[in-house]
Image (tube, rainbow, N blue to C red):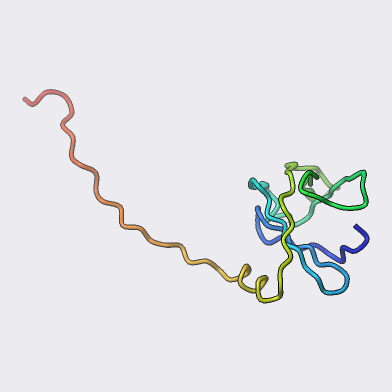
Length: 112
């Protein structure tokens, strides 16, 4: 914990942990953590001096009059990443357009 310099929320599934000494770790949450991308603020509690994939984070909402806890989400595995990996993660991903065939016509009721 004392080696964490700062955290950077990439989206509702990924958090980048910037460490002292220029190392970085990507945490891929196993499930979407609703509100994480928009709020970009979370808290964690641990009884140990380190975070692991068993720990839970809680999204914090700034309501203007204080802070309100939001969704609680389990952390995933920590992966060491390079600057190049981070740049690739931050690139916008194109949405693939898929051609959807028109539905087959159906008869409704008995023909008249």
